[in-house]
Length: 297
Image (tube, rainbow, N blue to C red; front, side):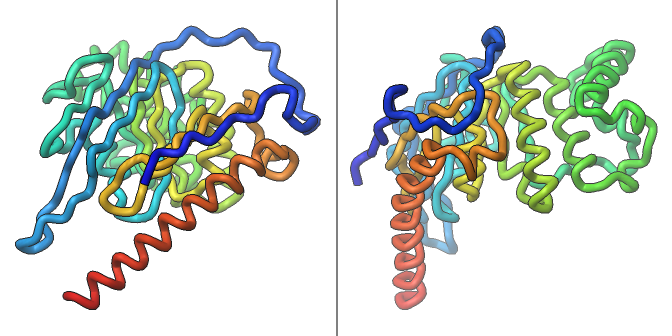
């Protein structure tokens, strides 16, 4: 199936949505480029190899926010794992800032759906964890952790037991723990999926404000198409297994983004309808493939 690049709507075609354009000056970029070049990967299912990625090619520019959507099992999380040096492709090359990903690289950091906080450590100590592992001096760890706890509005809870925090607060601790390390590339695997709808919306807006100030390159995996459109500069749709890119859609919504865009912006709705039709096709293909595999099992 060929890659489809959906045409962005020109300024003269944009509907008036009542949202004022931001007057803030652009922040200096701190992210770096990411590239997948002819990547192929498979896993063993019993004795049978299962192709997960098939000639996967994707380039992400420094400081871009790119979301990847697609049916379950299409290789989204596998691609993140390659960037985070959790697994190596069977063939092809994965690069960060022009250099092949190798053991020991500190350029990328993960943020997962579950906060993965250590229950025996206090809030501040959890935020310091990554810096501690990387050998950052104690005084510097303390200073940077305090600064980030203020940015996520949790400085009053620095000495609290993490088990007594709400799920939204715990996820803010996880965000601080990740961003305090100043990653050049941030790998996000459904980081808001475990939150209720209201908390999720708040976390999305708060995170984008933090990202706009720091501007690491973000690769964001999600099953929520509206979330992908709201947060991203580009949305990549992957085909049902074996995963490959079939749509690369540029999102030209104004920043800062607000939840009201889902309801009020005709441009948002246009992106959603265009992409959801293609996503539905890929999900149906994936479901048919599963039925066929079960029949021949």
